Image 1 (cartoon, rainbow, N blue to C red):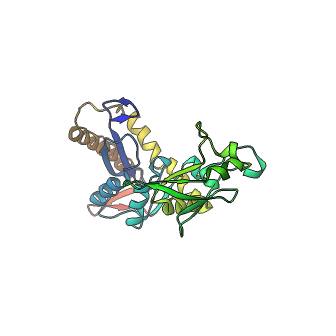
Image 2: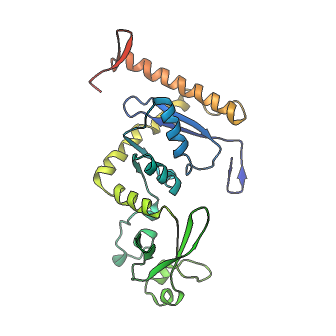
Image 3: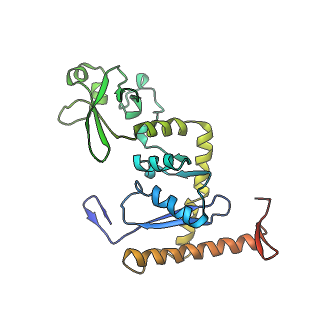
Length: 256
């Protein structure tokens, strides 16, 4: 797995965790160096394991990408993804601070596919690639005369301000607005007690790295690691009364 100019024998282990009992309900192995392409295989794993998709799903800001957002949209999922720092509305007001101008300070207009800067200049799209990436750019003369120039145009070559995004910008804007609400913050806050502890529990159980090489072998080993974790969780739930055997079947206790 490569990241930047480096390369290492590593794999990207992905898990989806149930909110009630911290049981791993979906998992897969990837060779991607980040999580920007992992939602679609994660949803496929969930569908295969449980026969359905969850009512709600949360993920950290490493998953914020056009492809992942489109996957949630296509599957009509109520998703909650933390947005990147530059995408969020800044806590400091632009007019009453000396902070830099970030992407969130620009207004996106889906009707004519343009961005408008804080000083009113319209940035049209100047290029679009086959992979969906897009570049929006202002006018050099307007940027040069703008009072926000030094805080906005950070190019070492003195170029005008550009905005880099992709063809899923409307979905990004929608997620930004959603995650700014108190209701979304409440849902997302639960993530730190759902999935994050599971990785720690797996490591504390003694698993620190794969003992085999090759994606298929690693996937098999990770499946066993996840199964062992689930056995512990299910056994604990039975012993504590959260799940109780009833007529030969497991029944969920109404207390949960």
